[in-house]
Image (spheres, rainbow, N blue to C red):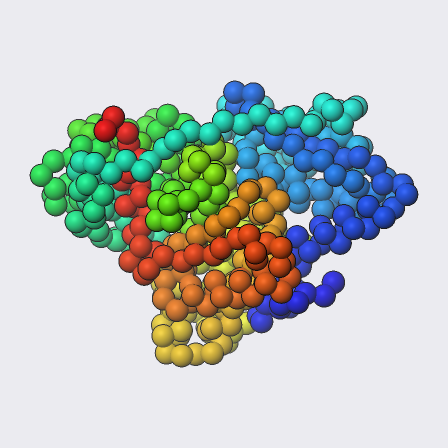
Length: 458
């Protein structure tokens, strides 16, 4: 495989989109290619499918691992509790084993079972028509600006809050905290409440609270969230699940909670005044979000941190999911930290991930050309991954935000991603426009957009 743009610090990078295109071209030319389809079902009967050609079972060793990566990306982009496969018994048997207890994808199955509150299943369909079904629903959310609002963005390394009056931020602050290593839910509650009160003190009243937070939320309840990684299951059920609701009651204002990736996309749509926006927040993790052509949120999961982007089997493993080559290790502060040794930048292991990122950012400010290669490499990752994401989303605009994009590194990252699109995927370069907000919006724009979430009937 020959890439037109190389990642300076990661010569082993194998973009999934390039691998898949090569496979699809070969399968299309094969006389023994067969129809292949995957259906993923989620809540309320909503579902999405993929259909294409694959080699007949046993003819090409790439079939099972590539379809594994495709299905996993579909699963984390859309969300779901059931996978239905047609056309390849080998792929079906692999997925059936992988997504059971003790299997390679047991984390994924357990996560989805928790979110959708039903057992995870993998089934085989005898006909292609059984999987060629799509059913979705989109809803308008956010873009409400009137009144005195609190916007809160809960990150894994810092929490951001804004006091917003009639759409204008009159106060914003960032506070470093360590939610992922604290098992006491009171730590989280106190941090969230402190931020809310700080913003409230800069307004005459609080009409509404909007929250942008990593994880999955249903009716403002926390279903799954990495911020509470160390909290016991018992404490999570008793004290975490309704935490944002409880804080809002103490403040005395209506609440709306949304996934931070969706709020990133919403922030982009609000700034650009257009739809079909994929938002990617590169912070403690990778947060993905999407708004459709009507600037509505789709109800998809959009947890792209767990979606694979690299087909290199020796790629770094994500500690939480136990899987390799996934976005969290490419588009987050972990991605920067991963590449630092190759750039000759030694990081003190006693530092927190956020502090390690700051060391690299200081090297950038100092003009270290090796530090620049870190962001160039991430930009190469991103350009190829945008093409992969375009399989699952209708994208006209991509917006990046988050701590990793601060400073010159963000601009360098985006320029390299554009180079990949221009040289490798010219058809996408013509369609997709890449954006990076100004520095202030990059860091606190998430909390301002979050403030617009609650609908007060204005």
